[in-house]
Image (cartoon, rainbow, N blue to C red; front, side, top):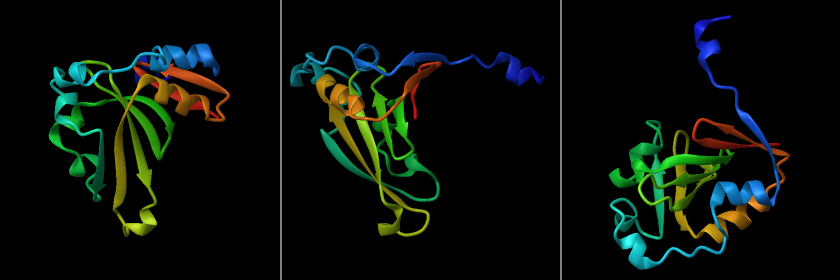
Length: 142
């Protein structure tokens, strides 16, 4: 066994249920106020929703500098992820649109700020069987 395989943490497996989704998204009743978002050094500089474009260089080619600070939080599928602000914990949905409309090597993305309740409902609507926790990321298991 290689040294790299020995040091990789084994992901923890959680059942896919309301309690786990609440653990991932936070309290669905929590509403982030504009005042709270205005003091966050990251979220205050991001619009509620933005269209992003990427070229073969990857997603960061079309993302405003401050948006690149958002951390991967939940991988729902390759075309849909939740990102989390490292400063205030606000969640964002990052959704890839069909590459066929943009041309080869390009993709169109939408970055949308979510309230905890919206993120909660989005995750509950997925047909996942389990949720894996690896480092700081959650992965839905189909």
